Length: 329
Image (cartoon, rainbow, N blue to C red):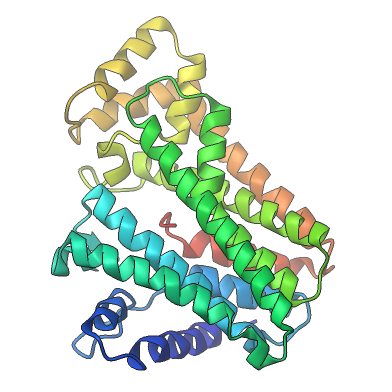
């Protein structure tokens, strides 16, 4: 499995989607993926598309026939990224100006919505690779279900921002949908293309949700401990981070008041993170979050190994997904 080769092939296929259309709208889409001639060096990991190709190879088929599906997943992810950047007011992504920061939020929304339409059109090309027409519609259904669940997860995430006491179950639902639905879609579509039954596709979808939960937990831990002060956008936007959610279940009344004093401030400041860190670490919620991350990964490994006994390959796929995401899904 050579992830670099898959990224290169996927990059060429994505570029063709935009270069084959003349309207400047597609130049904006091209910019988001780093295809401008004046672009500084920029290498997207194409997490969702490459994951689909890796899993296709894992199941024993040629990844090339799944390229249209991989392109579709990346276009949907681009749609989500653009809307996320507008929603959070994030001026940059991966060290570059965000699309909305360059062209404004209105045109950015146009570009994102256009990517959504292009993604569905890509799946209609599957019959050209020898798949039956009915399979195209099944793939579109899986993609639409995954996209809708991803939007539902984002709704839950925003809804939680103004709530202090969020249950672990509510957080898990949000994280698995927001960060895992598209990964689940990638794995399920790969199963569909490899002639797996609906039960196997559902199990693969569930694996994606587990991976999404794990990635969200990893991102939340990074927000509190591994990102320079003042740069933790999710923390400063008062999003409920998993270690904090866990801590609220065990905190004393005094500790809850301290957390409330932070999260009910009109505007959070970078130094507020030190208060949260201290409480979370004292309660033991950091370790508990790390343990849940490990449990999610272990369950995904068990599921994948049902379909291929090569544990090294499944570990490689999982490592690529969890380490390649950088917490941005």
